Image (cartoon, rainbow, N blue to C red):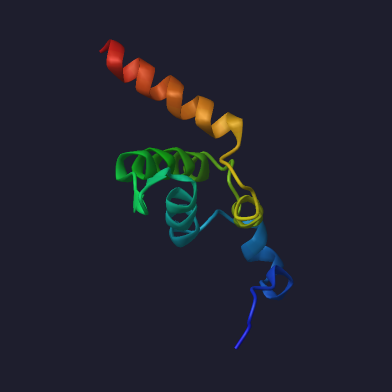
Length: 92
């Protein structure tokens, strides 16, 4: 059974709305580094926090999150945001 997700079947209001928690969680595990098949959970949680914050601020929609699943790596703007946050926390 080969089924694929068709975003066109999702209502327009949902697509323009905020990303879902499951999208954020899935993206965090997709983009976290893996060693010998094991996910780096610290990195996954950092990505998850960054994307959740983007959602809360209204900068990550359902459609944008869907598009991120087709990327091979996490876009630089999110990586930079995580690095800035970690550097700021190290200074405190």
